Each structure stands twice: as C-alpha cells, then as structure tokens.
Length: 163
Length: 385
Image (cartoon, rainbow over all chains, first blue to last red; front, side, top):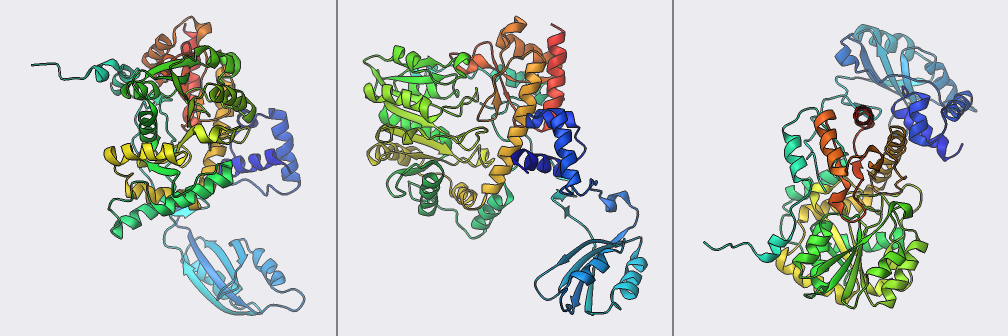
C-alpha cells in the first residue's frame, strides 16, 4: 500500500464509476497500472465492494430505515464479537457497530415498511440471548449519507472572469 | 469643465479582460476557465464561526494590526509550516486581502522615480500598484524554457541604479511555476548584491503538488529585506472574505501599518474570525481541496497536450498555461474565437505581461466534468482551424 494506492481509494470512494483511463490521467499512472492496483486492492479486501448512493426517499419505494441500539451482556472470552457476528448475518442489518456510551451495539436496519422493521426487531433482535434492552429510532428523513448531502443546494453564482 | 481624472489614474491601462467579460455576459452555456478562485465553498466550520461571532455582536473595529489571536495563530503556523519567523506583536499585519497588502507594501517603499522589477507573467495588479505609488514598473520576463521560473541572468540585466525592489509571486498566477530553495538562492544573491527589497506574494503557497513551498524570506539573508504577502483566499476557498496578511521586519511593517491605518483601518472583523477558524481547524479541508486540484491538474494537462496545446506541468497554483503558438493564432484571437465558437472562456496570456503572449491561462478550479467538456470543446475548436 503506497501513496498512489491511497489516492486510488480516495478517488473510488467518491466515484467508483470512473474508468481506468479516466483515473489514469488523474493520477499519472498507466491504465494498466490502475487496473492492476485496483485488482490487488480487491484481492486484499481493502476494497470491499462498489455501491451507489441512492436517495430512496426520492425513489419513493416506501422503504423504512431505523437505528436500533442494543444493551448487550458480553460473553466471557468473546466479548461482543459473537453476538455482533450473529446479528450481522441478517440481510436487514445494513450497518453494525460497537459503541461507547449508554448502549453497546448500534444497528442500521432497513425494511420494506414499518411492520417489517418492527417485526424484525421484536421477533429476531430483542429476544436474542444476552440482549438486555433495545431502543428503536425510525429514521424520518435523511439529510446527509456517507458524505453526500441529499437535499438540493443552489450553486452560488461565480464571476465568469477574475484576475 | 476640467478633466478631473488624475494623470496617474489615466496612466493605468484598463483591465485586459474587460471586453471578454462583456462578451461572456451575452452568452449562455459558457464554461469558464477564466476565474482565478477556488470553485469550492468555504468550509462550513469557518462560515459557522463567523456567523456565530456576528450573533454575539462581534462587529466592531479590531486593532489596526488585526486580532491578536489571529496574529498569534499565524505566527505559529508560519513557523511550523514554512520555518518563517515573524513575531505576532510587531511583524504580522492583517490586511484586507493580499491586494491591500500589495498596495501598502509598494506604497511604503516606493519613492517617485524608483524602479520596481516585476517577475512576469504576473498577477495584473503589480504594475498598476507601482505606477500609482509613483514608481516605474520594470517587467522581467520568465520564459517557458525555464518552466516560468525567474532566471537570475534575466533579472540581473534589468537592474539599474534606480532599481529599488523586486516583486515575485511563486507559485505563480498565471503560469503555475514554482521556485525551489536553490532557484531562490540564485535570486537572493542578486537581490542582496544590489541592495534591493523583495516583495514576495505567496498566496498560492499551500497549493503545490510536487514539492513543499519554500518561503523566500527563509532563503539566505533575505528575511531582513523581504515583505511576505499571503492570505486565506486560495487555500481555504475564502476569496470573498478579503483576509490577507503582510509580514515584514518591524521597521518595514510599521511603514505599511501607517498607510493601512489611514486607508483601511482594519480588515473586516468577521473575516478575521473566519480566518482564525481556518488556521485552527481547516487543515484537512485544505488538504482535500489540494488533492482534488492535483487530480484535475493531471487530467487537464494530459488533455491539453493531447489536443495540441503544449503545456508545461504547473507545479503550483491552479492554472494551466498552454501555448497556442502552433495554432497560428495570437492568444487574444484564440481566446476570442474559442469563446464565440465553442463557449469556453479562458484568459489570454498577454494580459499578464511579458512572457504571457501566445499563451492562455486556464484555471482548473472547476469540476472534472466541466474540465472534460471544456477539453472536448477546445479540441473541436482546434480541429476547425
């Protein structure tokens, strides 16, 4: 991993749809070199995948997301790892983190509708061994996701010429 | 009625880009590479701290020199980043942009008849500022063969008994040229030999892509005879905030301060508050912007060379300075026709003085998408010639 790899990662994190040729001119590498480095980063699982930032509220499919916080009794020898791994197997769990503070684990869960999310929490998550308490927060509106603002901002007017 | 306009005001030529400006206003769908400012918004923490200060009623004059906290922070920053040693109390003055810094620097050292050498191509206000101060601007040409560095021999040729000072600006607007420590040493020898003062406009210091910027005042014994100018506009995307600074040994600074207190009193306080936040907490924003400029530069320079506009690799600032010589058009003709036929606005190099003719200044401080579209249009224009 060198400075050029880090540069590639920053570029791809912002826009993974750029072609190897486009990235090559930006980084002063050859397109072949770009492809080789990206393949190596994929093989090493530094690049875990490529996805699209979708504003689902705008797409209007009615999907519901919730942030769920869990208080968990950690396990001897394993701490939070085994229960976290178990939770992360659920398709509905998009993001899962161990946190400091009042709660231990924080999940981002999505479902087709409110019923699906609440059923998932009450039937799968809450009854799980070692989970002492849950708090479910339904997301009402997203304004910024992973560095992308989801609301429209007017571009300020620029002078066409300035010295 | 008499003609009330002073001879000095009459003497200054009007801006060379005015007619392009008027033309562009009548057109739609123009991609402008003619703008010498970042396309990013000012980082929000900077805006927020300024807004908060206004809400708290911080809206009065500051001391003439500027907020003590800002000068303290700047003094530490310059020492850390550039090994520049200036005391916050006596050797740092906050100005209303580098433009004011330049004006008061020139006015505090020029007497009628003094010659001021100006490394060109250069920012358009240097020569008029010298003229307004009663001095005589003497252009010193930096050539493409030297990667637009100031050549010590060319400089030496222009020195006369009347030479008083030299103005340089590296990284350079409009060429993107930079000067290394070694390059500056050769210039320092001449400046010291001829007992000149150096005004170094380093407003693009943060925008270098291959090497770290070398501050002129840190080279040889230049410190005692250098006025360093810098500001927040380019590095932090704060052009409209109008905050710059002038650093110099106390005797020189005091002279500039006298002019500053009569003509400006102080830089706007809300701008100074924003600048303080910039220096305290916006390093990462700045680095992100510099990284993005680097990517755009690489992409754009490759594109220019591909479409037949040879261009040296600019190591600093955010300007490409390609040559149009091969097209058979002058820089003004090229820029005019390109704007009319393909709706891409660039600035003819001759606007920037000696050494600028036959070149174009293209600011790559626009989105990659616009840069690509502009390259496509420029290519179509060249094929039509």
